[in-house]
Image (cartoon, rainbow, N blue to C red; front, side, top):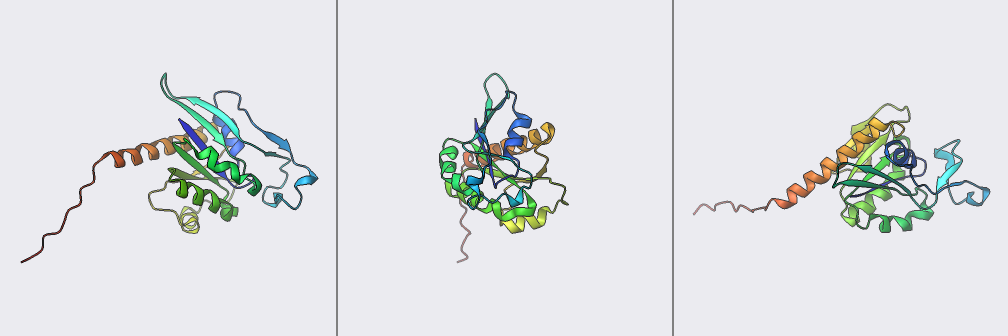
Length: 189
Protein backbone atom coordinates (compact mmCIF):
# COMPACT_ATOMS: atom_id res chain seq x y z
CA UNK A 1 0.00 0.00 0.00
CA UNK A 2 1.54 3.25 -1.14
CA UNK A 3 1.35 6.28 1.17
CA UNK A 4 2.68 9.71 0.20
CA UNK A 5 3.81 12.36 2.69
CA UNK A 6 3.69 15.92 1.35
CA UNK A 7 3.94 19.43 2.72
CA UNK A 8 6.01 22.56 2.59
CA UNK A 9 9.75 22.91 2.83
CA UNK A 10 11.19 21.88 6.19
CA UNK A 11 7.99 20.60 7.82
CA UNK A 12 9.48 17.22 8.77
CA UNK A 13 8.57 14.81 5.96
CA UNK A 14 12.01 13.14 5.89
CA UNK A 15 12.03 13.03 9.70
CA UNK A 16 8.62 11.31 9.77
CA UNK A 17 9.74 8.65 7.27
CA UNK A 18 12.96 8.07 9.24
CA UNK A 19 11.19 7.80 12.58
CA UNK A 20 8.68 5.17 11.55
CA UNK A 21 10.32 3.07 8.80
CA UNK A 22 11.34 -0.48 9.73
CA UNK A 23 14.15 -0.36 7.19
CA UNK A 24 16.91 2.17 6.84
CA UNK A 25 15.09 4.73 4.70
CA UNK A 26 16.28 5.62 1.27
CA UNK A 27 16.57 9.37 1.09
CA UNK A 28 17.74 11.84 -1.49
CA UNK A 29 18.96 14.49 0.93
CA UNK A 30 21.42 16.91 -0.62
CA UNK A 31 23.36 19.72 1.00
CA UNK A 32 21.77 23.09 0.41
CA UNK A 33 24.12 25.36 -1.51
CA UNK A 34 24.23 28.94 -2.71
CA UNK A 35 22.77 27.71 -6.03
CA UNK A 36 19.38 27.56 -4.29
CA UNK A 37 19.50 31.17 -3.11
CA UNK A 38 16.64 33.11 -4.63
CA UNK A 39 14.95 29.85 -5.65
CA UNK A 40 14.25 28.18 -2.31
CA UNK A 41 13.15 30.07 0.78
CA UNK A 42 14.81 28.47 3.81
CA UNK A 43 13.64 31.20 6.21
CA UNK A 44 10.87 28.97 7.63
CA UNK A 45 13.39 26.32 8.64
CA UNK A 46 16.40 28.08 10.17
CA UNK A 47 19.44 25.88 10.57
CA UNK A 48 18.30 23.41 7.91
CA UNK A 49 21.34 22.43 5.84
CA UNK A 50 19.98 19.58 3.69
CA UNK A 51 16.91 19.12 1.55
CA UNK A 52 15.11 16.31 -0.30
CA UNK A 53 15.66 16.52 -4.05
CA UNK A 54 13.63 13.52 -5.27
CA UNK A 55 11.83 11.59 -2.52
CA UNK A 56 12.31 9.61 0.68
CA UNK A 57 11.30 5.96 0.89
CA UNK A 58 10.49 3.82 3.90
CA UNK A 59 8.54 0.68 4.64
CA UNK A 60 6.36 -0.73 7.42
CA UNK A 61 5.16 -4.34 7.44
CA UNK A 62 1.67 -4.61 8.89
CA UNK A 63 1.30 -8.36 8.46
CA UNK A 64 2.27 -11.12 6.01
CA UNK A 65 0.02 -9.66 3.32
CA UNK A 66 0.10 -5.91 3.95
CA UNK A 67 3.03 -3.52 3.71
CA UNK A 68 2.96 0.27 3.76
CA UNK A 69 5.39 1.92 1.37
CA UNK A 70 6.09 5.48 2.46
CA UNK A 71 7.12 8.13 -0.04
CA UNK A 72 8.16 11.53 1.33
CA UNK A 73 7.90 14.22 -1.35
CA UNK A 74 10.26 17.19 -1.65
CA UNK A 75 8.72 20.38 -0.32
CA UNK A 76 10.26 23.10 -2.48
CA UNK A 77 8.10 24.54 -5.22
CA UNK A 78 10.66 23.69 -7.90
CA UNK A 79 10.08 19.97 -7.20
CA UNK A 80 6.26 20.05 -7.15
CA UNK A 81 6.16 18.61 -10.66
CA UNK A 82 7.10 15.27 -9.05
CA UNK A 83 4.06 15.22 -6.81
CA UNK A 84 1.43 14.09 -9.32
CA UNK A 85 3.70 11.18 -10.27
CA UNK A 86 4.15 10.24 -6.61
CA UNK A 87 0.36 10.36 -6.10
CA UNK A 88 -0.16 7.79 -8.88
CA UNK A 89 -1.22 4.55 -7.24
CA UNK A 90 -1.24 6.01 -3.73
CA UNK A 91 -3.98 4.81 -1.42
CA UNK A 92 -3.68 7.96 0.62
CA UNK A 93 -1.53 10.84 1.76
CA UNK A 94 -0.43 12.75 4.80
CA UNK A 95 -0.15 16.52 4.51
CA UNK A 96 2.41 17.51 7.10
CA UNK A 97 1.88 21.08 8.30
CA UNK A 98 3.92 23.55 10.30
CA UNK A 99 1.17 25.68 11.81
CA UNK A 100 3.49 28.71 11.74
CA UNK A 101 3.51 28.42 7.92
CA UNK A 102 0.06 27.14 7.01
CA UNK A 103 0.09 28.68 3.52
CA UNK A 104 2.90 26.28 2.59
CA UNK A 105 0.31 23.47 2.71
CA UNK A 106 -2.33 24.86 0.38
CA UNK A 107 -0.75 23.51 -2.80
CA UNK A 108 -0.47 19.99 -1.37
CA UNK A 109 -4.13 19.95 -0.36
CA UNK A 110 -5.19 21.37 -3.72
CA UNK A 111 -3.24 18.68 -5.63
CA UNK A 112 -4.60 15.86 -3.45
CA UNK A 113 -8.17 17.06 -3.86
CA UNK A 114 -7.61 17.39 -7.62
CA UNK A 115 -6.22 13.83 -7.75
CA UNK A 116 -9.05 12.61 -5.48
CA UNK A 117 -6.51 11.03 -3.16
CA UNK A 118 -7.77 10.50 0.42
CA UNK A 119 -5.62 12.42 2.89
CA UNK A 120 -5.28 13.56 6.45
CA UNK A 121 -3.53 16.62 7.85
CA UNK A 122 -0.90 16.20 10.56
CA UNK A 123 0.42 19.29 12.35
CA UNK A 124 4.06 18.71 13.21
CA UNK A 125 4.51 20.20 16.66
CA UNK A 126 7.37 22.70 16.61
CA UNK A 127 6.52 23.95 20.10
CA UNK A 128 3.64 26.26 19.15
CA UNK A 129 0.34 25.78 20.96
CA UNK A 130 -1.99 23.43 19.08
CA UNK A 131 -4.84 25.39 17.44
CA UNK A 132 -6.84 22.77 15.50
CA UNK A 133 -9.93 24.95 14.88
CA UNK A 134 -7.80 27.78 13.46
CA UNK A 135 -5.77 25.37 11.33
CA UNK A 136 -8.89 23.67 9.97
CA UNK A 137 -10.41 27.05 9.09
CA UNK A 138 -7.18 28.40 7.55
CA UNK A 139 -6.84 25.30 5.36
CA UNK A 140 -10.59 25.26 4.59
CA UNK A 141 -10.60 21.54 5.36
CA UNK A 142 -13.62 19.41 4.73
CA UNK A 143 -15.02 18.36 8.14
CA UNK A 144 -14.43 14.69 7.19
CA UNK A 145 -10.66 15.19 6.76
CA UNK A 146 -8.91 14.15 9.97
CA UNK A 147 -6.59 16.73 11.56
CA UNK A 148 -4.07 15.39 14.08
CA UNK A 149 -1.21 16.80 16.12
CA UNK A 150 2.12 14.99 15.86
CA UNK A 151 5.83 15.06 16.53
CA UNK A 152 7.53 13.69 13.40
CA UNK A 153 10.60 12.77 15.48
CA UNK A 154 8.61 10.33 17.61
CA UNK A 155 8.04 6.81 16.28
CA UNK A 156 4.86 6.44 18.37
CA UNK A 157 3.50 9.77 17.15
CA UNK A 158 4.29 8.94 13.51
CA UNK A 159 2.61 5.54 13.91
CA UNK A 160 -0.53 7.25 15.25
CA UNK A 161 -0.56 9.49 12.16
CA UNK A 162 -0.31 6.46 9.86
CA UNK A 163 -3.03 4.61 11.79
CA UNK A 164 -5.30 7.65 11.44
CA UNK A 165 -4.66 7.70 7.69
CA UNK A 166 -5.31 3.97 7.25
CA UNK A 167 -8.54 4.26 9.27
CA UNK A 168 -9.58 7.26 7.14
CA UNK A 169 -8.86 5.35 3.89
CA UNK A 170 -10.79 2.35 5.20
CA UNK A 171 -13.76 4.50 6.22
CA UNK A 172 -13.79 6.24 2.83
CA UNK A 173 -13.65 2.87 1.00
CA UNK A 174 -16.41 1.48 3.20
CA UNK A 175 -18.63 4.45 2.39
CA UNK A 176 -18.06 3.91 -1.33
CA UNK A 177 -18.91 0.22 -1.03
CA UNK A 178 -22.30 0.93 0.54
CA UNK A 179 -24.85 1.56 -2.19
CA UNK A 180 -26.39 4.96 -1.80
CA UNK A 181 -30.12 5.12 -2.32
CA UNK A 182 -31.82 8.37 -2.90
CA UNK A 183 -35.12 8.76 -1.17
CA UNK A 184 -37.66 10.92 -2.81
CA UNK A 185 -39.91 12.80 -0.46
CA UNK A 186 -43.53 11.96 -0.89
CA UNK A 187 -45.53 14.68 -2.52
CA UNK A 188 -48.80 15.47 -0.82
CA UNK A 189 -51.70 15.28 -3.25
